[in-house]
Length: 120
Image (tube, rainbow, N blue to C red; front, side):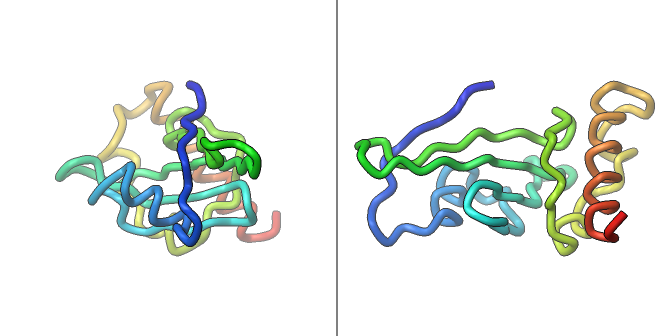
């Protein structure tokens, strides 16, 4: 998957951009540092999954803000998801087929996020 670049108007928060682009599905948003955004995201009327968005800022470009979005089943290598977001996610069995690649990738991501939070 690629990056999405757009113009970020002065004073517009990163959270506002994601709420615009991802809509009502964004239940909780947290920016970690300047380059990682995490969301609890409801898929339609279905389960809540984890989203990771990497962010990038370009000060001299019209398209001065970019992001790369990944859901938890894509196996993102970013494990700084805040506890309050992890606690909102639906049980894996309600989201993915047990034993599927998507299930295993999401499980691995969640496990590593919890390990990171617990200092392991």
